[in-house]
Amino acid sequence: MELHKNELIEAGLQIVSVGIGEPKHAARYCPKLAPSLICLVPEAGGDSAHRTYGLKNATAKEVATQETGKIALKNVLKGNFGGIPTGNTQMMPGTFIVNPQGKIIFAYYSDHIADHPQIEELVAIVNKD
Image 1 (tube, rainbow, N blue to C red):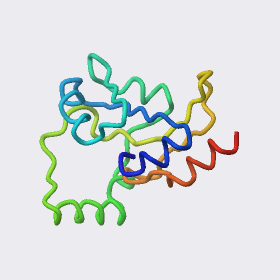
Image 2 (cartoon, one colour):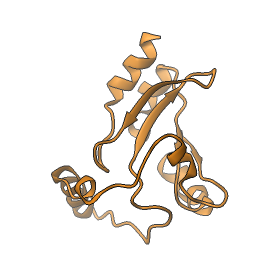
Image 3 (tube, rainbow, N blue to C red):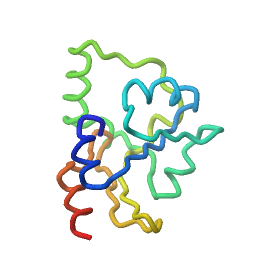
């Protein structure tokens, strides 16, 4: 999302990332990796916000896809190695657009752990309203 921040801001979107790790990790890494995003993590950690929106744990089929393998290899070749993960590392991703009145106007439930909607699709949803 950080790479597309200008497009998203021009569309009137404020990006909020809801994490599943520990608040101390969000405080440490979000300003460095995604300074234009608001990063939230429940004080006690956990995935209750994700479950409230209908997200679920990934199955082996949703983790071990050709797409996730390509992304993992690409990151390793760039020298990007993650540390020890915290939180529910099996949680499937999702993307939601919530209007200023709090109504969900778009919900995207990922088909696998590396699946995300296209930025153009998100901008088109906002421009439609």
